[in-house]
Amino acid sequence: MTDTSTITLPEVDEQTQTKKPWLWSVVLLDDDDHSYEYVIHMMQSLFAMPVEKAFKIAQTVDAEGRVVVMTTHRELAELKQEQVHSFGKDVLISSCAGAMSAILEPAQCDNSDD
Image 1 (cartoon, rainbow, N blue to C red):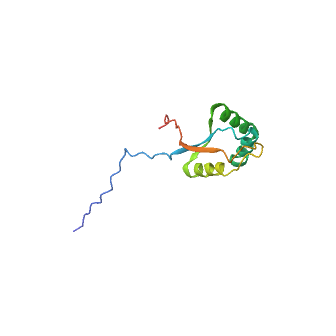
Image 2 (cartoon, helix red, strand yellow):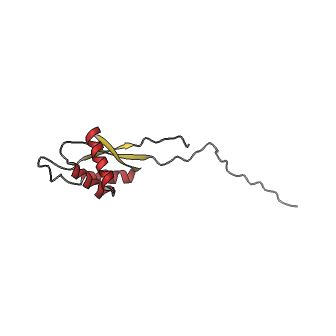
Image 3 (tube, helix red, strand yellow):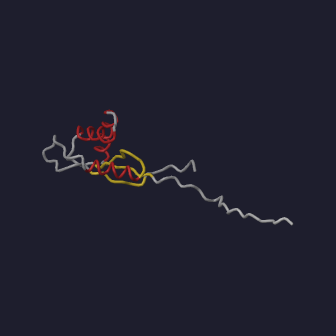
């Protein structure tokens, strides 16, 4: 006589969707203690931006009070924020007390391709 056995496969939830990693934006905040030259130098040093893009960042932060400089995963965003905070004071402005400020914000993502 032959033994018969039944194999039960685990159920697969077809409704489960893989979520994309949450992205964060590094937002540079304006103040009156830093020159365009400082911002351009910082953007080139920390974010490897060409001078033209770094100049646009300096213009935008000056005009709008804030600018997104990078959108990435949380760990890299935190690193870049810390690097901005550690960049030092602007030697061209005698009243400058220290580095510029940057904050992290959840990125505004377009979910149209979900």
